[in-house]
Image 1 (cartoon, rainbow, N blue to C red):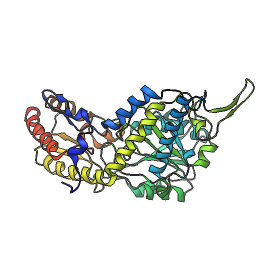
Image 2: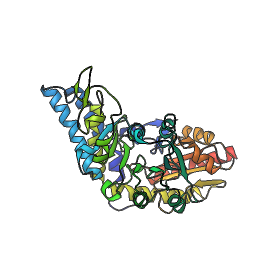
Image 3: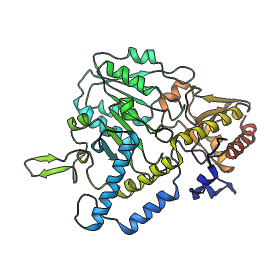
Image 4: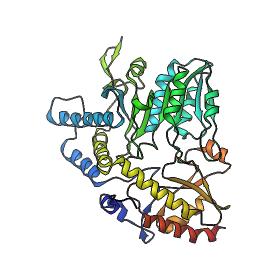
Length: 407
């Protein structure tokens, strides 16, 4: 156990962890899908609804000004968190999925027939399907990087896929199935050496590390609040200012305009050009409290704690007959995907739930990766700052009870 990391103090900030499931204390190991939310965030949401609910950027009255100030405070908090050059490079969306769709629709508008996009076999559907939707209008080709048996990307193949027709490389920072931490800075440098821009899906990385977009050098970086102990329905698109300025709006409506007539419309400056309509200004404002929680706890402390849990649980898992773990890269986040013999992943998850253990089962919105692994799905356990070694032990004991039932 890491010295100076008071996990019990952290757990007191998350009342849901006191829940009983199946007559047993909840062990929540589905953090890759969504993390739980501390009291500070929930209290902020309550306060905002009770005291400052008014539409942002549209009123001179006090409530509107207060709501606007809180939303823009979060924008600057996010800017600082990822080390963006300007607040204008921070676009609020409904989540990582919408952020990628925004880039596919708007930046993809410039692609031509015959252009190529490089993806990887470990991508979430959110970084596959938007590009396939673009293929309905553009005759573009998707080229895919494979992995080795440890779940690491084949960087030599990645290098070889660039051609004069390559217009974008888009890849995940951390695999939501394998936990593999990809060498995104190196991959960005390779793409830029060919004059190719880069989009990074940071949905799984943002809860575990602090991405420095200037150091990485990427052109777009996307992530979600709800995986970072924050509210649901709030996401972030970071884009280099010069690229965002060159892109057409993603949606039209209120807030993203300067002037509208039936003859012509001019659009607002960044970042508002891409924020049509009323945003979830309550959720956006409360997201700042989630960032506060991460900073107060310490992102490095969180990652070290999670790594200790990962290594401890992995060793215990391998003691169970029939266990196969998918993803064994040396640089790996706190995610364990596994199967037990021929047992169906759903059956394992169902029985664990009866013992109070919440894990994820299925293809994890990564069906091409499952096909590559040769399985229909896996059981996935994933850790967060509030998980404990006692929970890891109880999880292992529950699995030891489940395994004989299904083997």
